[in-house]
Image 1 (tube, one colour):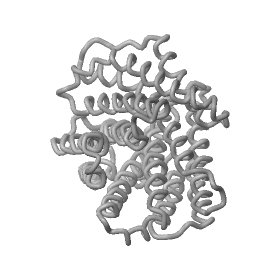
Image 2 (cartoon, one colour):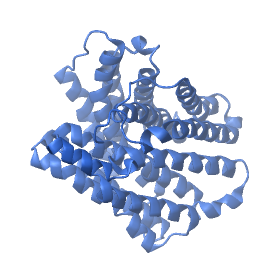
Image 3 (spheres, one colour):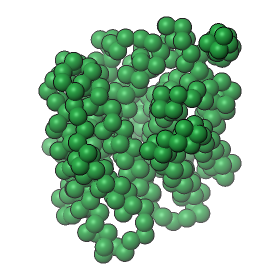
Length: 401
């Protein structure tokens, strides 16, 4: 009787709002396509497009890719995963629609308006709402090992507020300081989630021997990550941070590299859903190491190191994860269409264009920006087109979700 009632209730909900991954994965991907096209055209010389970038292109690019895009993917993933963790139904229906509406209105404002306190308040609403819906079932089930995700979302909200205060001219904190802190928060989330799922996905996807998690190595990889985050967030004296920041970046990178080496990456070459995950995690590691070198000696450019981490690490991890999660949570086989392999390859090329091409030919920096932005837009446009019916239609097996 309960299953019948649940099924009847589910049928009354628009499929797009039956679980959080559906609207957020789809809309965030489309957002990144439009945003990257504008960004590429701006660097190609269409400076008049700045009026569609919250009147501040660099601020807008950083903010929308970190919060509008990546933040939405994180929320969509966590509000979906919490149902599996706890056994409690995930947020859906009108409650999910309200969270999504705040996100959507904020994004439209970022495209068409100038900085205003109203847009700030609207944009600071959707993440705390999501954090509340995430924390509630975790607390009920006393799954304290997953509760830390909710404070991290609140932390991202605080950083989002700082972004807006900078845009409004109410504080004079350097944008780079706040954006770097945000990248570190996101990086910790990626390292934690990636470390949990990549070995499991690899084992199941390659049908090889199970990859065990060595407790001391997990601590050795994650403890420096959390210390790195604290180093970035706490107001340490510059003389101390000048030593601890690069040290923690390098240690985090090296320990996660050791962790990564055990995951049998070569066995994933013929499985696109897996090799992009492995490429992304390796890019995270390399990005951490390059950032460490930058802060040690400035021997590596900040932008190159940062975009190794953000485009290659976070961006590729997102595409690989949403491609897999969307199939699994809609009752489909974990097999992607050939067109998605093209999307994966395009995003890898976007990473190399934004990093390696500039390192080899600095004179082509502006052209590399344009090419990388175009390849990113192409990649996520493919995802949006291929996954629109998957995300907007009911599960193929008739189950809720």
